[in-house]
Image (cartoon, rainbow, N blue to C red):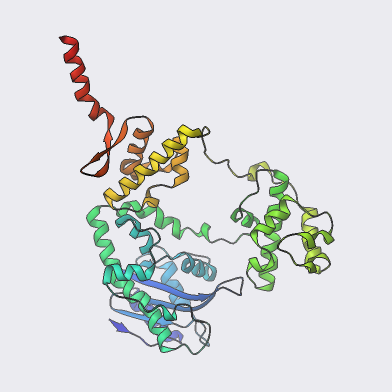
Length: 403
């Protein structure tokens, strides 16, 4: 594989992207800093396929990233490969208003071919290639220039290894017939709605304090206000106020500015500074959340109780057995809260639809309805359908009745 020097000019970048545009896939990774700014600061982009790889310096004087961004967002013929790519996709969306497509995330794919959930990149490389990554450069300051040779080598390694691993994962997906299982997960990763930064929706990222319209109305107003303050100052939103503090103020709004000094998470200065005045004005002007915007009630079904909790535990045990049997990450099949909802009588659940139903949901439903049990065979726990176990017993009963 050819490894290029650090790309710092538009002409060289355009030539690289022209070559990569003829590939079936391109591996992508980014290095960024977001500790001190509202928007993540893009510091380095790594691109590569099975033939060549390079690192691109987006901070280089005069460089135009358009050829690279066009390749990633407008070229539907090239599959874009990431590992745990959520933050990488977010950065590309912030720059273009579009997301890479089509997209493939090896961390997500690993859940369909192994029991690994959120496997780290270094562990994946060691598992597939038996190579150990030097993690020393991982937490360096990527915004400082010049970059060291060690930093560049480490960064480019992220896409060179990815280019070797992707075909292996793809081959296993084809062999197991599980590629279609991942379609919805990949489309979800590429959905621009995940990365939109609408201040009026910022409150939805915060754990809602109940379903009181007055409280949620204040939460919505406060969250939108915090986004504006953070953007204006170009600092992380948490530097303005943490989520817990925001939710606490929404639930227990201070009546006067001096009361802000008593709020946990705020400094004494808030009682008479300008930002405190703006905060109090937001609270005063907040309207109750309209019914049309109220969050949906979770699908809980009937209260679980002791028996229901036991059924939920059995479902989780069943999930462990099935994920082990077919070598798949349990999280790809379903979640704990979904198991509890199923035990409580809810039936409109993702696990009871499509491939999840065929793979696991059907047996889970049989367990809830008393058609499936557990047995120990050769020291291993396995599932047993009750109708299969009951047929000999029924035959014995019929013979006895005939005598």
